Image (cartoon, rainbow, N blue to C red; front, top):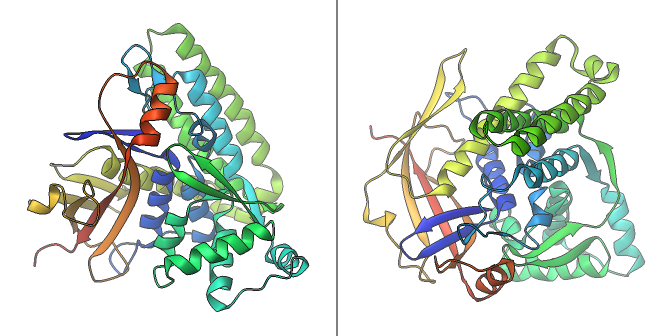
Length: 363
């Protein structure tokens, strides 16, 4: 969970939603000047699902009893983080549900889909583990909310998707079908990503014996996971490009993870440079645009925010400004007694959205 400190209180953002934002940015990335995402069929799911292990934790978010604050993702005890990271890695290696099985379920229940419904189903299956209606609204902007809601009800009735409610993200759906195939590269990239974070824990929590021991155990376990996935067939698939593919995928997961986190953590006031390729000297700088729009925006719901950035060089496929958003829950920044107090605060909190708009550099 991301805890963003604002003048109005704590803005809490789902860690899984942050990962979905990272994937949406990656999907819009690339043009003649900035290279597109390589192997997108494998990399986009890995970027999208790299924090999927947080979904279970977000069923009952926890409070740091020493500070009274909701735990942010980088504050949880290493024992909690290791479990979440391991689950994220496992889920990143799962395959995709078959369209034929979904159609069989629809036929068995006498349900049918029109053209828009078929597009929604195709998008839902591409999500694999979990998704929200907000994801569909973002990825299918030309389909109205009512149609998406109605299609989700049809898919629930046909047992294609399952619906659950989580205190932070709200309504969450998951594909309720068998996942065929596997994504070993996705699992490897995400494993490398979290091993990198675990190495950081060894340094940042060096004086905390238990934390260090858990981090070391996690690294040992992931070494075995990586060795298991690096079998001959996998090397045969990639050939001479195997090592390069491992490095490139890990690098892009890390780039878009940090870009999304950087946006979510706070309202930014200083530019940030993102190194896309050290070897090719490709960098993109995001610079906050001084504007009244960085304050609270007078949109339909008070509390919604928009921050504008200049991107230099322009990295997106579209030559026009692009906009992204995420939902969050705004709660009072008052010390919480326990996890139950946080659950109540989330239930009573104000559901808002954060917006980011990227514009080309000044000529």
